[in-house]
Image (cartoon, rainbow, N blue to C red):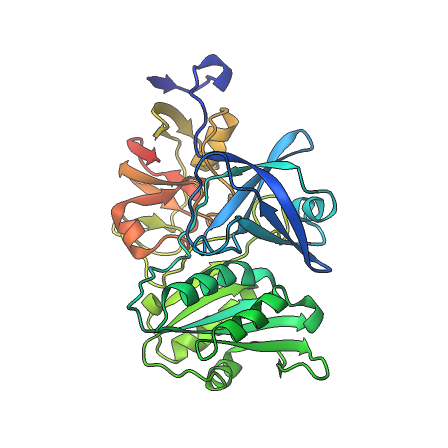
Length: 390
C-alpha cells in the first residue's frame, strides 16, 4: 500500500500493529549510588534478544506527549536472567529525575527493541586484551561487555580504567570487586578519582591525554593484541582519543560510545554506537563523500520515499527540516530515540538518491558504504531518495 503524505495525517490512513516494541514490567529497583538506580525488568512476554553493549529506548508519556530516552543495558545476555538499565540522575533531566523519584516495582514501561553497535564479536578461542575507559555512568555498557567477555573468552584479559568524582559515586563498585575476585588474572580495575578516599586503592586526578600512557602502564596486562572501548563524558573521551591517536592506535581497534544531548534536553544520556575515524561514501556534514561537497547547505525541498513495516510513505522534506522531523509532523511513527544522530535507532538503508547527514559518528565506514543513513539528521539532496527501515 502506498501513502502519499504531502498533506495527509496518520488518522487518514490504515495502520498495521506496531512491531519492535515491548511492554516491560519493573521487577526491582536497585539503588547503586545516591544519584543512580538500576531498573531490573521481568522477562518480556515476547522474546527480546540483545547483545552486550546495546541499549534500550524507554518511551514515557509525559506532559501530554511521548518522551524517549535511551539507556545502555548493564546486564549480560549470557549470564544475567533479567535485562536491566542503569539511570543516573541529571540535574535538569526530566526523565532521569522521574525514573529515580517515581518509578517503582510493578510499573510497566514501553520500550523499543534493543539497538546499538557498540558491540564486539566474542569467541571462546579469542586471545586479546580489552582495555576499557569509563567515566561515571559510562560504565553501564562497559560492565555488560565485561561480564560477557569474561564469561565467553577464557584466554582474554580485560582491564577497566574507571574515572569518577569520589568513591561514593562509583556505580557497580561491589560488582566490579566481585568480578575481580571471580576472574583473578583476567580482570583488573584501575579507579581514577578526583577526590580520593583514605584507604581506597585508586589513582588520584582525572583522565587526561598526557596521563593515558601512565595509566596504561599501571595495568598488569600488557598484551600485543589490544582493543579499546570508551564510554563516558565527551571531554574525557576526547582526551583518551587524543592519546590513542598519538600512540598510533588504528581506528579499527578503538570503539566509542557517547552520551549526548538531544533536542530540548541537556546532558540527558543517550547511548550511541561505535565510532570510526574514517568515513566515506555518503554525503555528511563533516566530510566530503563520494557524492559531492557536503558543506553546502540544503536549499531545496525534495520528496522522500520511506518503506517501513510493509507500508510505503511519500512526503516532501523542507530544507530546514530533517526527514524524521517531517515524518513525525505528519504522524508517521518511524523509530527514533536521541534525535541527535548518535543512537542509530532511526537507521535505515538508502537505496536510491543522494543525502546529507549532519552527524555520522554512529555509522561505521562499512555502514556508510552499504548505504545506511540516519533519518533524524538526514536531508534529501535529490527527489529520488528511497529509504528502507527494518
